[in-house]
Length: 283
Ligand SMILES: [Zn+2]
Image 1 (cartoon, protein in one colour):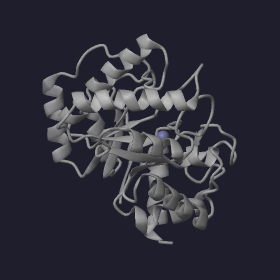
Image 2 (image 1 turned 180 degrees about the horizontal axis):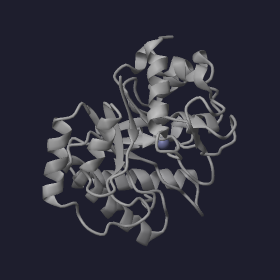
Image 3 (image 1 turned 30 degrees about the horizontal axis):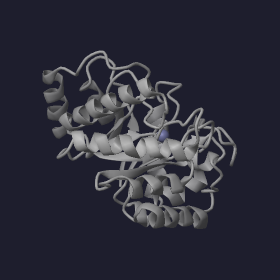
């Protein structure tokens, strides 16, 4: 398995590699730009080269880039839809240029419409996007959501619709967020139910589809539909549950990435060490 955290890109994008390396990460996740703004400019070519150089010299084996929040490919608003498709294409190209393996994405919100229409919009957009970015190796990982509002992806039949609906699904995968799935009502505190969840995902979209796990405890209770991340072991999921999650033999090739709160300067190190201890002591 690979283990790491979401790290900041403040300063130069390649400094994110140093931040992850100092923490002993073998995987990392970044936003390639401000997640709450549309793109202002491309990343400088020199900075891209430096990012690749530093990564090669590091122990980091998996890099995931997270899609900005503004992008919505499930929307029925034309202007936002077109803008989102363009931004997505640019993001895939940039992710490929950085040599990152994955682009982690939410599936969008169908506000003022229905989930079915939202899924159709999403599938139509992905067909355009994959065509425009043909030949690039970056995999698009569809993240599950907690089920609040009109967000797609709280249940894996949404993922299945997308995998089945697109013309070519060879560049699709899944990012499983533990806090979101718990919020959506799946009691992953029980090892048998976590295994059943992996079975379900396997049946819906393929056994090897899960490439990244967002390893987060939850401030919100089971089935709350709320998306509130907590430090590992401090939330409703609890430390014991993470033991069977991180040691699950079916996830040995998966990258575990923490998106836990960064409320103190040592928070990342503390959470990573908690996970490392769970791995060291086995199931
Ligand atoms: Zn997540």
